[in-house]
Amino acid sequence: MRQTAYVDTPRESASITIARSPEDLYDMVADVTRMGEWSPECKAGRWDDGAGPAVGSWFTGTNVTPDREWEKRCQVTAADRGRDFAFVTEGTGTRWRYTFEPVEGGTLVTETWEFPAIAVESFQQRFGDMAASHIAARIKVTHEGIPATLAALKRVAESRS
Image (cartoon, rainbow, N blue to C red):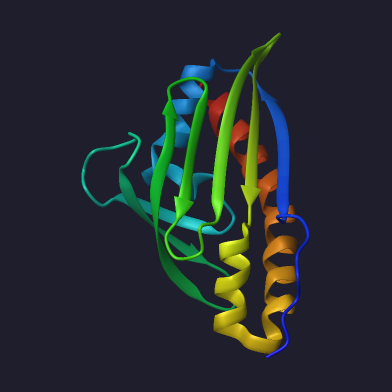
């Protein structure tokens, strides 16, 4: 099996200013049951343990692409209302983070995705010689998906002002 070495952790990030408070936007994003309202890939989420957005809580997201549908369990790693909401996916260790910074006119929301070495290793084990192309596809989907997610979040958040 040929493996592709990644010097840096693949990472994608984008930001948008939304005319709502950091607390309002945090509440929207941290309510994983609403993720399907703005994500082009994650169509649903549910809390596994009923605890809601608290560090250590688990939820399951349902993702849909033209090629397939799958569920992924995630654990909350940061839950600081109005500032930071983050989680890591089970198995691959893929990290997602949303930060909220007050700015003139609202809040600067930044969404960040990181695909750490453990995720690369997981893809190499799962896809063998095709791992690099699958990783490249994930990077492309995320590169396009983050701005789409943020734009939809802005549309939904500002329509309820």
